[in-house]
Amino acid sequence: MASKFKCRCGALIRKNLYEGSGLRLLVAEELTDVASESTSVDALLDRIVAQSPIVAICSQCGLLAIVDDVDLKVVFYAPVP
Ligand SMILES: [Zn+2]
Image (cartoon, rainbow, N blue to C red; front, side, top):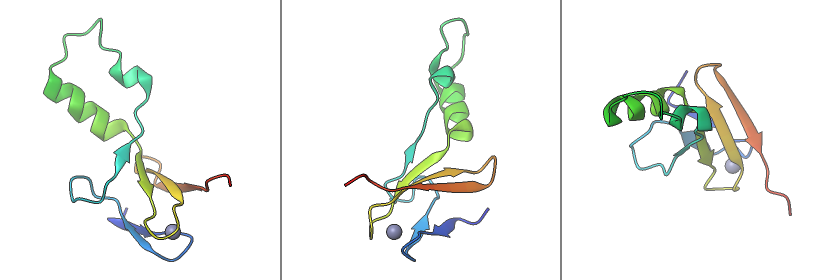
């Protein structure tokens, strides 16, 4: 998948982490359940980053996009007025 995608308003949204785009990760609770494992912090962070969809908010229109690189899809959500 490309490093950016187009919002419904036409703005380009970058989806590369750690490039100052203000992205977030949508972390499933199961990923943080490590009570029974001896997982290192680095391995845990790698797993969270690899398996969590990216959440981006368009700076132009405020639309929220959830980007799932595993399923190669982007789903948009609009704020309720
Ligand atoms: Zn937009």
